[in-house]
Length: 212
Image 1 (cartoon, one colour):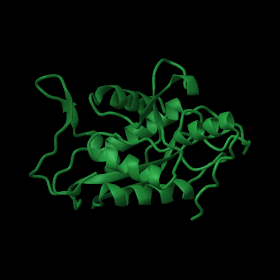
Image 2 (cartoon, helix red, strand yellow):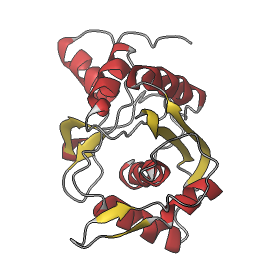
Image 3 (cartoon, one colour):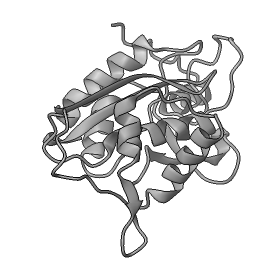
């Protein structure tokens, strides 16, 4: 998220064939505005059990983004997992992905593309992949050639399309396959699933979704 600096990027994917189907990148968007746009996209690209699962980078502006998403009552928020299985029991109480080390998600993303398990038709996103390399401290970073002209309004680019695609791949890996059964309204391990479980325990009905 960056107003005038780096791009705010959304990467939308289809879980059935692990394909990037839509991409949004623009630097002039605040975290609050990004949340509204993301919620609209999530409902537009909804699946058989409800709105799309959203995994976001929660560092810095990501906290504002997450707060606004919850105010909008968007419940399909991805939660950090622990352990090897993608179940509700392995989900932590932390929403989104904490960017302390890019190598695990980018390594998984690279492996998925090499293995044909992630289809990315975005030339801009693939172009940004080529900017990632290890620095002198063996830390993965994106380095842009400032002398090369690029058709992008962001003043300082950080390989944001690659991170967004990596988080989409994370969702592909950690979101279980679901039968087309509308009974579970939200994916296991998301904010909405937690609220539904709490409502069941207290005997309350889950509030209706906000209509768009």
